[in-house]
Length: 295
Length: 309
Image (cartoon, each protein chain N blue to C red):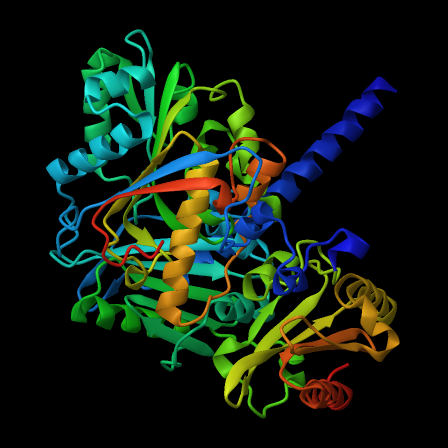
């Protein structure tokens, strides 16, 4: 009963009286009409049924084409040199912040496609760096960042997405763990990353919707969604990613399994103003394969 | 005087040195004890590389994303040993010293979802992952690639580790307060902190039940004919005053209209009820009927009176 205490309780959700951003935080996307007012964001989702084969191998040419289509739609420029020239300058030092988590890492084919397009826009190859765990050391001096990682459920944050991907820019990420990692977006205000991110890429080729075990990975709970999302807004792309994995989880189990609320996504908007967490204020542009799109 | 001072400092330094040596010896023997629990070879799978150990500060280096779950319990130390067999991938044994058998059970219960496979006190196996607990230890054996051979070695390794753990360990006594009728056994979770409750059953974004490392909590689901299960939560506090205070806070935050009745119908048409018995708060959520909520609450309180201090 929020009005009396300031707390947000389960009953608030049951009553359907919560704000949209908060609903997103708890993996409860609002259905129905688009809300008026407030900042808006765009997320492009592209899918291709040939992106991943039955053995889980990623097709480099298909992924490259998917990224091109998505970036073209997001930037509004079909020519890739032109589109990427709007994202990076020739004199930029570009860091591709990837994710090397052993169980579900950013595919090399995605990294390669991004690197190729950055170089194609005129940035010298030696000025394009790729790193994850060493980001604080190797990417801190970059003038432009491309943020790319797979989407997965996460024990403590609810999901691992683009906001969380910058955790390796700080010496002790565990400092951001309290309260379901609510303040992860604070990292985005640090000088090493602030206003440097030119593109967020949330890889949903084989997303993980549930996990088990010490490393929170179970091969039964990834599925070949064969999608990639791109956005200028890390909060918006994470909100859509969280919506996707929750939708899959409900479909798979027949109910929503308990999982930590994705509070950090809502807090990224309400406290840090990093982007848009409210699904009703996010325009989702869908491209390509439509089967089992879920969202 | 200066000479006396130097002499005293020398004695203090020597005592500190001895204490440090003793401390290191204790810690080392703890690590050695854990190493002793895990065999170096099972069915042709051999230990590979150096063992690695982690404590509460360093466990983040190993459990990327999962460490907080263990830190919400009294986790002390983790030993990990890898096993390989040519052409078969890796099998990893992770042994967690959880400080007490209660917390060893607790971390096991945190994500239990399968049938017991007869290893340790409670166990389960699925998709290349064996989990069990015994004594103060929780053990996970993970096959990176599940094959008949890796499954077999995971089970064999688990049995060998369980056999090496001498103490059996007791489940938390608070479990005895769970009424048996309609209880869904795999849904029983034991934990301490609000973050764990959030994970299992979100109640509020604030800690309205005053959960902490000093509280013990059990949550379980109860089957409801023709409907979704209802939920029973028990929280034991350090003393009765703390329990009463937590109940007041919970009622004020979650069901203020219930007042002293301690029961209300929530917005989904189901019933929530809460009561305090000695130093335990008992709450029922999502009962389809008022009578059912009261009945489950009464049954839990009765068991508390009979079986729990």
